[in-house]
Length: 137
Ligand SMILES: [Zn+2]
Image 1 (cartoon, rainbow, N blue to C red):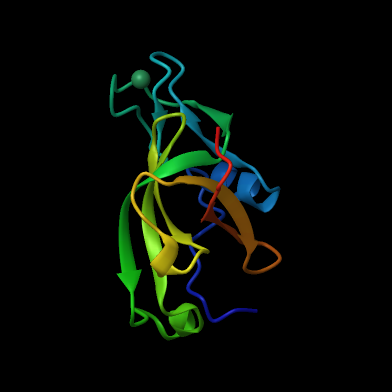
Image 2: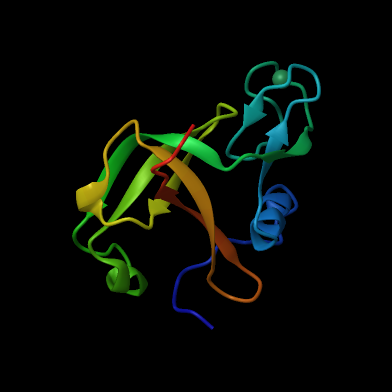
């Protein structure tokens, strides 16, 4: 049980993402027509409008494209993390995803290499967070 507000993980559109996170891996839809990797999940490809897509495993590696520091929690359940950062991470495969950073805000900067960390919130729900990698290649 958690007081953190949870997404609908049984929504068929996004369920494969949450299932992958629960298994400690990252997955997003890849367009079967133009190979565009998209996030968030959508019924149709934003590049070519082809419907559907194949859930594809991703490396979980990327770089920080933008950062925000939360000095105050926007929800009482997040107070335990304050201050914390949310980054817009550009993944190696192209898509960008917002995620909480595990590192303290004082050590974070744009362009840093990061890797996904899968944080189990409940038995059913795991969220993708990121941490800085110092030996990125
Ligand atoms: Zn496409």
